[in-house]
Length: 386
Image (tube, rainbow, N blue to C red; front, side, top):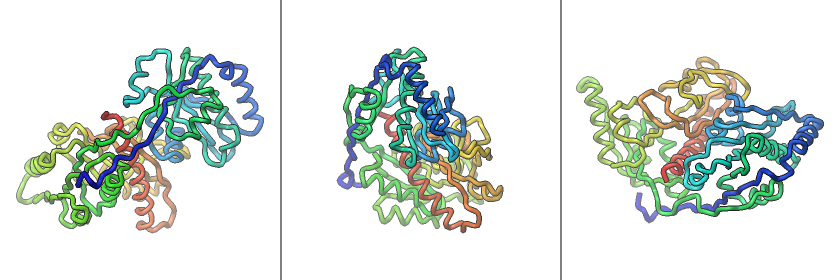
């Protein structure tokens, strides 16, 4: 992609700090607020470690990138007869990104967030109660300060200042201007996700320089998409009668090495990569059409309604879910290792199936979800490389 077509999307962010010795986080004040919440028919619930069901609900409601952060800490929830209304997580592992690294060595500081309230429960005071409960939980654990990282909206900054006396301690740009990671995409089919990545890169919303496409099927429409975008592409087809799997794997490896990528994206690539390939490229990300568990050791995954279904790894994930009449499918983006679909999940979101829905309509809904989850995962990956 010509560099002149790229512009870096700049977004200013603020790190906020809360002093936990503030009297509004005293136990009597927080407990009174929780009791008042219960009197309104909203049940507060504390999970010292967020449950699988709660994490799945977070992904469904808030886009798919929060659960990986919330999973490592505690969480306060509020719910009524309609379901969960909001959450506030606390004490999660401080992420290894530029704007939080210096805080990793501050022993008296703990992280607040992620934090979210569903639309129908906003402007009811619910969020402030959850915020105070989570900050009290950090104080209860012996911390003196809470870090609220990378707040980008002024109304959110004002909210934290008003309800927690939070103060800004650092201002920075979330997107580093001028750095676009040279990326090679491997695909096998229509290439809708390839197109979404190309479009995001050119719009400056994804920090990528898509430098090449490799496909393994001559009929893959992704080839046409690459031609239209002016992106070099190559067909590496497996002549099964003429060469072994090892020979074919070597050709795939050689083709990708020629493009010298910093990142390899697998977007509908229907061939298991060899251990040599995985070893050659330290940064490989795969988009998988299923809601994968955060713990790669698990072969089942819990959904927002409490249902437990198979993880549906492998190339026929959607077909297998539909054959099982599963009420859920989904999309996950994960790092690639030698175990199929068992790398660290970067972002994920579940998707309900609808009885009697034509497959074309389901695929359209799934593709739209995949585009959103993929973009969130790429941005998370890029942040962690700085």
